Length: 122
Image (cartoon, rainbow, N blue to C red):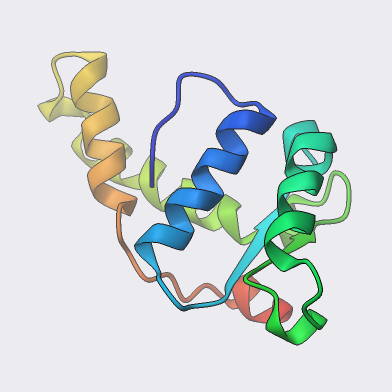
């Protein structure tokens, strides 16, 4: 997890670069909703640049876009739910919004999630 102040294509590319740095030599599969910054010019250009000339099964980064308006397909919804449940269970310990954010981040940061939805993508 890496927080950003805005959600746009430049920050999305920066996040993918961060992932590549965190996981050197590993191929990355991103399963994304259809937010415009996941699909448009800046991100497409970056993916073309890093995967240029490679066969599909050798791409450094592969992106799968979920069907529009299909939260039942999105494994990220389960991650959000886990974070929100942690807040529900411990909200009484929080005295500021900053503490709520920290609790949420601690609940999901660097976790290995094994939700069934995640496996439908291979």
